[in-house]
Amino acid sequence: MAGIRLEQVVKSFGAFSAVKGVDFTVDDGSFFVILGPSGCGKTTTLRMIAGLELPTSGRILLDGEDVTALPASARDIAFVFQLFALYPHMNVRQNIGFPLRCQNLPRGEIRRSVDEAAKLLRIDHLLDRRVGGLSGGDRQRVALGRAIVRRPKAFLMDEPLGALDAEFRRLMCSELRELHDRIEATSIYITHDQLEAMAMADRIAVMNQGRVEQIGTPQEIYDRPRTMFVADFIGAPPMSFLRLHTSLRRGDRLVMIDGAPVEMPELFEDRAEGKFALGVRPENVSFADGSQLRGQVIGAEYLGTTQIVTVTTASGQVKARLPSGNPVQVGETVGLKLRSDRLSLFDAASGDALS
Ligand code: ATP
Image (cartoon, rainbow, N blue to C red):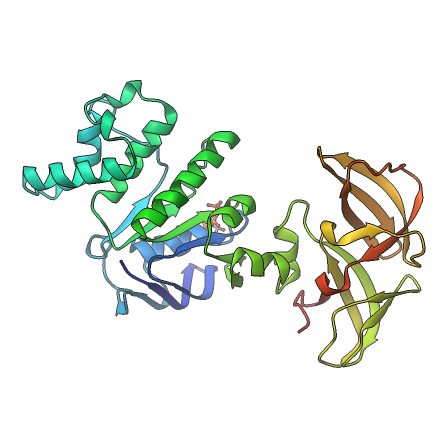
């Protein structure tokens, strides 16, 4: 297996830059997810790692070796597209063994490798079956078997579960992650689905408009978003922002919002007067009668054990995740308490978090 490293990778198509200087390192054996909205450059980045697209500039290293100019066939990387594309006229053994037959390996070796892959995927009892009669889940496992049978240095997966319905997706996500843990193959997985990314990744790179906005563990990205884009893209519902126009001083622990003092994380720099945004996740908002920060309830979404209540204040809308037992009246005025150690403060002009 191998670590993967991108250094200042740029890809332009004519005058348009799809990838604008991307840097990241994927540790050997880890599961790395590139997350971002449609068109942010995920596929282009993955295609460059696979060797299907040549970077305009920058370097790609596989296991410490510069592979930037190597063709895909010389990289020993498996690129998994949609998992269900199988050869219907072949049985399971033939489907899984296909990549090895293409390499003209000896029959005995192919048999052993296929047996091993099928065992890892717990489909060894299906090896003689035709793929046509298999359940959806087993077909996905066969397709995975075909990807792992070559024992490549790394796996690249481009929304492999994209075409599946939500429930089946969740099942295959956890199977994929389990399989990864068993074979410990370096994997890069791309998705626009933040829940999928959070559930599967060791580390996530959040991309936006050709750049990486943040790299971190799912928890780091959720708890300490470095930009407003990340804060808004991650979480369901995402972070709420209260807008303020003020100056800030190093050591400040209070900001005034709608004339109410709100405690925030300690500030480590002075900031001239300007626009800022105080970000808060719904689970860190509660109702408190005595609070001077007040707003009006404009809606509540029932989610079983919890409800998401939307409150509008003079500085913006805030969503609160509350137990669904709490009776909430649309139109009522409520006091809001924000958990001070869980707030993020952003420069509203640049979108960057303040340290
Ligand atoms: P999606 O999830 O929709 O596939 P993505 O994040 O994977 O999006 P890319 O497919 O990498 O995004 O595309 C990034 C941008 O580069 C898009 O605006 C796309 O139109 C553009 N692009 C990709 N390939 C080419 C190409 N061969 N020629 C011109 N533009 C391209």
